[in-house]
Image (cartoon, rainbow, N blue to C red; front, side, top):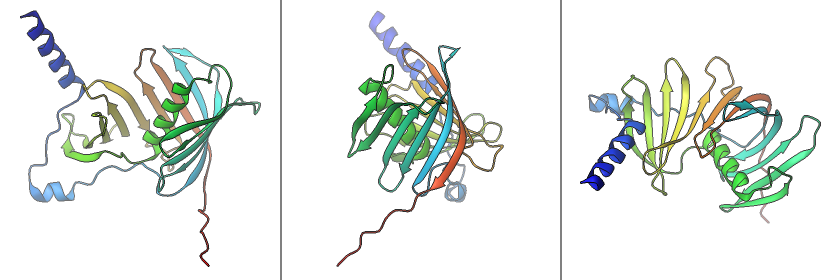
Length: 221
């Protein structure tokens, strides 16, 4: 009996964390409902100042440089001090994370992997298959994607908050919340990322520079 109660409790908790989506009321409304897409359309180099808070405590600000290509989903990133010292340099390569340079406390492979996954979540569309679209209980428009690992990604257009992304685990617990600033012309001008882990952390990213990068064409003989 106790086991059944625990299962029911877990089920209810999951339902509360992964919200119900109300489907469009008609086929025409469903066809006209477009999914929010705050993602890069071409290869970009973006530089942000990053303020980190761990368990509510402010940490030193750093500079983040990202080279992100949505066509290949390849990411190169670096973290620097305000003085220009490279603390971490890593990139994704065919699904692997290659660390080129790492100084404490950024010398953990898991840290680099999680950082690149966060960058992809911010700048690239979900790789999961489109599962459902409709409206959250508060009226926000949402498209939900099912990930290969069993997790979920919601891309939300909220009239009050702006565009946001929420990533959930396979059990329905919230793992990431990303909020883009709707008050600026460049959606990447101000990005908030809240991570829900063993040690929760919050990142505030403020754009310094964003430049498109032309992809070199391979000449055929």
